[in-house]
Image 1 (cartoon, rainbow, N blue to C red):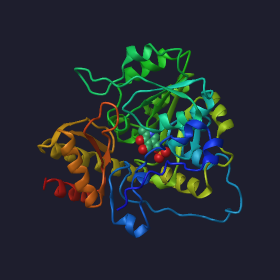
Image 2: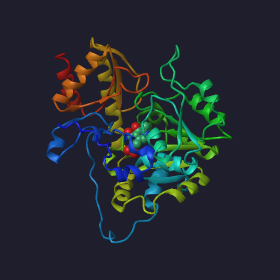
Image 3: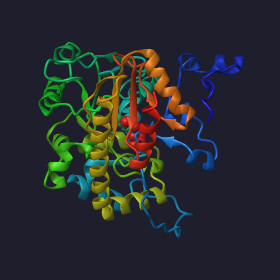
Image 4: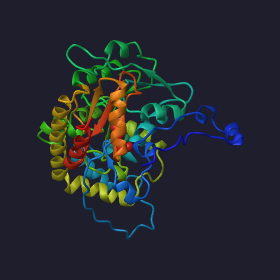
Amino acid sequence: MTLLADSSLIASTLIKRLAREELVDMVPYQSARRLFASGDNEQANSKTWLNANEAPGQGKYQLNSENINRYPDFQPQALLNAYSNYSGLPTGNILATRGADEGIELIIRSFCRAYQDSILICPPTYGMYAISAKNHGASIVSVPLVNTPEAMCQLDLDGLKAQVGKVKVVFLCSPGNPTGNTLPQEQIQAVIELFKDSAIVVVDEAYYEYTNLALTSGTDTEQVNTKFVCQCENVIVLRTLSKAFALAGLRCGFTLANKEIITLLSKVIAPYPIAAPVAEIASQALSNDLVVMRARVNSTNSLREQLNDWLKQQRWCKNIFPSDANFVLFRCNNIDEKNKIFDLLVENDILIRDQSKQQQLENCLRISIGSAEELEQLKKLLITL
Ligand SMILES: Cc1ncc(COP(=O)(O)O)c(C=O)c1O
């Protein structure tokens, strides 16, 4: 197992002189695959990857390579139709992207002028909002999540109100990564209302399918935040096939917004963002595999509850964050115990995510819900501590 050396160093004086100054010392997003080299396939398969919130198991897909000599459509119609059927939104409100990550980048590039405008984030939150902003030269305003007597990791509405007029894009993550909780609908609505004349509100729903909202809505046309997309001028919802659809390697996500926003983002996105094989596999997943996806989500959610119950009984576990997603975040009693757990797992080729450098998350670790076997392996090791 190789823990990668710092790959952010630039030694050449010429490149340092020519490069945008702020990029020279910038640390890139520490993705699961950058933190740990996956090596060749055999080496990668021998590890247990519980550090990137991927889903276990693979689907089976057919590929037709007949037209591979041609460029793909800018937005493949079959794919838009499939996501339209799934989300209940018209195709004109959907932009397919290379993962939700590309959606984040496009939004910042489309709405923020470099070195003038700011985005707002609510940490602890998904790291790519800040990385994409820095890459583009946008500033970052933080309004941290707060714990109330009723619930952990809620939006600070007073803090957000103080930023009205000062930021161009507000990123809300629901369910949050790495916190796991779904934000109350009233809070999201309040933020949309607060910024309705001054900023775009992005609701990142990468983990939507694991939530009660998704599991209890009778039809997919009842998906809650997507309805704001048509009703409000300033709302964008981000979705992905990387999580519940078990297609992280495909790189396919969706930006949902009103037609004007989609038109704007379409001016910034690359000319052929969705490779033909990606469109084919994604369309099949969205058309044929919804039953399989829902069964996967149900199984993940029940494994998550089992892991929660088990963690509660461990003396090194101080508290567990309530999760509506395919991972569990928990706090250890102290840094020594946190390091012991992490190191023991790494030594045994089980990779989880150390979140302790994030604001408010000292001594916290995050475990992605893999297969039942993978979680058993993890518990067997940790029980020895
Ligand atoms: C909250 C959140 N948004 C977006 C993404 C990026 O998803 P994608 O794989 O579609 O780029 C992730 C990935 O982990 C995430 O956790």
